[in-house]
Image (tube, rainbow, N blue to C red; front, side):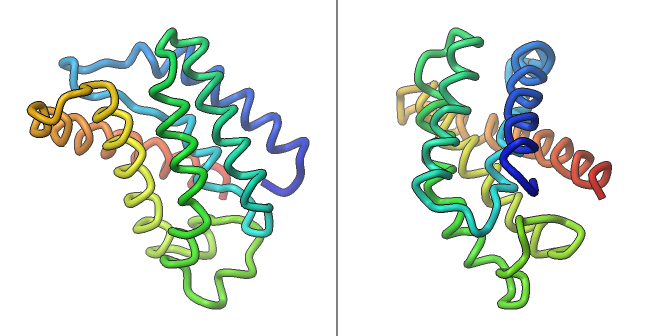
Length: 163
């Protein structure tokens, strides 16, 4: 995402797609894709950390507001926004750190690992908060794994289309 206007369009578009379409994809009460987090995954690398966290908070808040799931997306997405630059710096090679935003086109396998970690982290936190019970940890892990795989697939498709 090159500029603020493009970020706004992605923000609105991903919230809209999540609420209108992807919230209704619920396979066997286990698989839920959350493509809206793509917005956080490709935050500009030079963006101030506080801006990233605030945008992630707002993204989660709007998904919660339109999904009537007050709080779970806000918490998980805000945490994702907080850790995004840290995980990006850990996963990227030094020559990739000066790129404008994380992308499959110049990170290749590192982007795949980065997205896998970020998606798993978000989904695990989201489903753990949703379950509100550590005795359901196996259920949380099962939902996290299969939902992460589907979300990862959608993120990969979006990246291939953008490329």
